[in-house]
Each structure stands twice: as C-alpha cells, then as structure tokens.
Image (tube, rainbow, N blue to C red; front, top):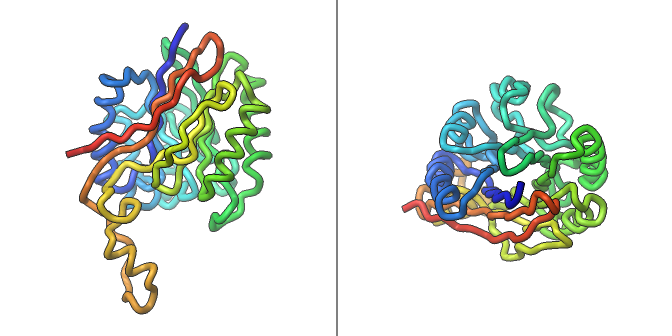
Length: 271
C-alpha cells in the first residue's frame, strides 16, 4: 500500500447540489486521482435532510460514502437505508434519536481501508448533543480496538470554526496514526484554513455543493425574507439555481506511515 487520495465534498443542497456533485465526481477521479469520494448529504432533499432517492442518486453518481448531520431523519424513509449494513452511510455518532442507524461506515479499497465517523458540535447548534470530544473519543476507542488496521476520517458537523479546529487538534494529539483527517461541514461556506496538524489533515468547513449565487445554497430573496421576519413576509427558503458548483477538499494519505501528506481545498464549477 502507498498513497491514498480522498476527496471529501461539502453539504449537498437540493437538486442543484446533487447535479454539482455528480459533475464533480468525474473531475475528482480524473484530475485529482481520487480513490475514495465522501460527501455530506445532509441537505440533499430540497435543502433539508436526505431522502432515499437522493441517496441513491449520489451513490449512482459515484459517492463511495455519504454522511449526515443534524437532519438525520427529516425524511423518515431514510431509516431503512441507515439500518442496512450494506449501505455506506452513517449518522453522527452522538445523534441518539435514530435507533438502529449506523454511527460509522467503512470503505475498503486497494489503496487502503478507511472508516468514516461524523460527530455533531454543540456550540450555537439548535440541540445540544453533548461534548463532541467525549463522543469522538468513545467512538474511536471502540472502533480502533475492533479495527486496528483501519485509518479514520472524522467529520465534525458544527457551526463554530473554533470548535471544529479544536477537535482537529484534539484528534491529532489523542488519535495520531489512527485519524488522518478532521474536516468540518454544516455552514456551507468553504474556509481557507486547510492545513496539516502533526500528520492530520484539517479544514474547518468544506463548503457545499449547490447554487452559490444566493445565500448558502438558497435564494437571496427567500433568505432575506427569513431574516427580516414579519416585515419580509412569510414563506420558507427556496433553492438557488445559479452559480452551481461543488466545494470540498482533496487529501493525500500515506497509508504505510498512517499520516496525511497534504490537503487542498477544491472548487469545481458546474457550468
């Protein structure tokens, strides 16, 4: 085994996000040589949650692993997918309200064996799911004991970049040679802080797959209406169709040395 190339793409927002991701897959395979492609499907169902159809669409497009966030069961039909051990999809390990759902998922390829774990942050989140540090320690302790040959990617789905950055440092100190990357999702805004922390690739937010012309994948008009409250009138968020792109990162891992070699942010335009 040698170098493993992992692409991790940010939250998919609605149908434009699913199209953007599908377009990005070919670029990630051909231009970057990605062996493993992970994507957060948290908002693929009309901007909120994930439905089985959207999951299957992303898998057919080339997603090797799909992760979720705080909207795990906004579409209850996804429960059967999450309960199927054959499906490479996982809920956050500290989301306790989805009985039977997998808290991690795996990928086995010729270039290496990877486990993917997602954890919810607590700062500024609508629901406090407890300490992500305690949750990830418990999960990695259990998984690394059962699968000592496997490397792990940690995704923290959270609002605060500080919390996400702190978890990256925590994993680098506590889980060196087990965790090779800690990346953040949820804000839909790609950050410019991709770096290596003692062999752990870190980036506090991957951004999103969707329409970038509005506000985090939604139209500017509907976003302003929400923020203006009563003065702006009623109605919910509407999916943005303009400026469709996919953002995330590409990570290069030395499987033999069990450490990340490089991480770079990517932005792939979708025409």
